[in-house]
Amino acid sequence: MSWVIGLHGCPLPTHETLAHEEERILRANWNRTNTFKHKSHNGTPATEQVMAEDIQAKLEKYRTAPFDARFPNQNQTRNCWQNYLDYHRCQKALTNKGVDIAPCDWYKRVYKSLCPISWSTKWDDQRDDGTFPGKI
Image (cartoon, rainbow, N blue to C red; front, side, top):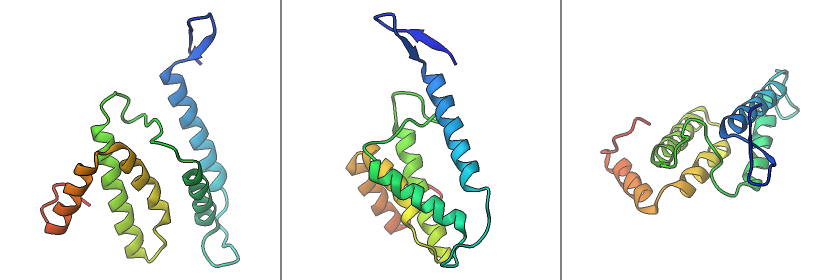
């Protein structure tokens, strides 16, 4: 781990260290939740049920958009756009499968916290009119 010495001589982690640590934790959690493939008592795959519970727990703790290593700069316009697309892609995919779209709420919360209301309203209108430039 790389550290930077803070104002009062205290060691502080760098952004790279935090991003690496977050990725390591996410990979560990992903491996932990995807190690078994049996069915749960209600017939859905157990991994989907565990992941849905993890997402629900994250949504309850949600305050604002977390750091995303794909968008390290101060300008979060692309982050806003990507989460808007991800939400609608997720919603479309899960609706076509006939599955609950609750996992998509994460993307919605992120884009709602990052994007100005006028942008999302404009994009919703464009989607309704069939003139939306993104691929959903």
